[in-house]
Length: 143
Image (cartoon, rainbow, N blue to C red; front, top):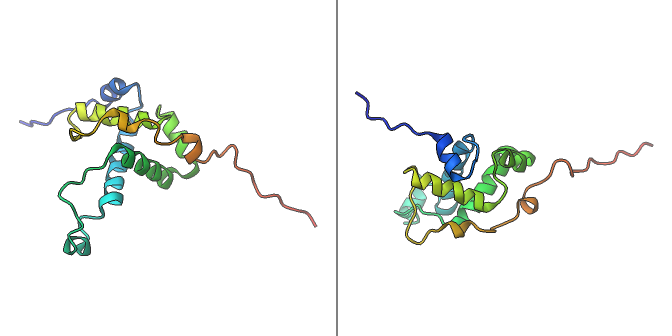
């Protein structure tokens, strides 16, 4: 008999604020990307030898927002904002809502110092994500 716990991503995302369950994988993978960006690769022998790999792989809300932004750009390029918006993510606070819903569901952990306010107004999506509709094509001059 299996003791697997069933995870209802739709319910978790609904409780977070009505986000698409499709963003779960992005948030999970983006967190891993951010942890590696902030703390380095724990399998990197040089990092281990220098003592630069910490036992705690914690990242704060600000670091996570920046890491998720970078991960979205790496993964989706100029469509990053459109993809996030399609999932219902329009502000950095949305990242926090999703993270804390995942914490409440037992899928992630926080420290006593972490709060939802750590995700407030880290950046504006219009400022950090390219808008493909506004991208101009190079002018080709006829000779």
